[in-house]
Image 1 (cartoon, rainbow, N blue to C red):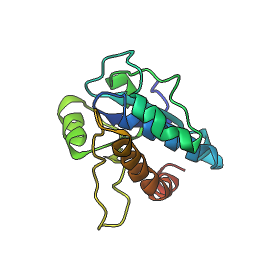
Image 2 (image 1 turned 90 degrees about the vertical axis):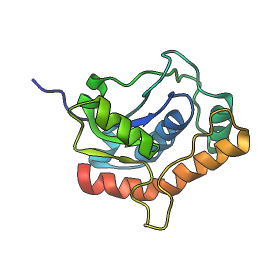
Image 3 (image 1 turned 120 degrees about the vertical axis):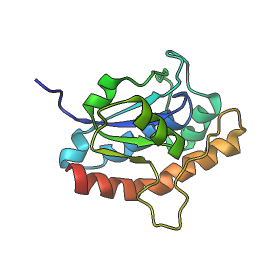
Image 4 (image 1 turned 180 degrees about the vertical axis):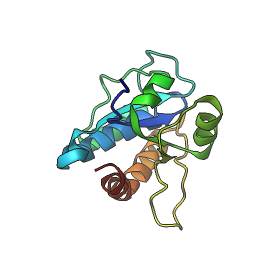
Length: 160
């Protein structure tokens, strides 16, 4: 019996900065939705994660003003089983798309960058803040927040 595809999976490199921040932001946004979107699960993984690593301290700090916590997060590596449960996979940059396509098969029908649903003039990749100062993480967070309305609209149209 096939697994139900009920998860939106966020993917970055190490699963300590971008994808955990995106997970917390998307989970909070979906909690305000109704119907099928409210039932979606959200998870994050890393293509080169060291399982068990805590989130970056600046990722934690960047989410605090929004009332979001990464206290329970520990990094996990991406597996084929994760992809097999995913209704959609959202990556942080083009390099993650290329890595997914070269390392895993099959992929879910919906694989895209987190910012792919913004108007054309917007940048698509979310820069990696790893090792940067708090403003770099805040910029990363803000680029995700900017993308949430268009991302939710896509999820409503494709998954609801």
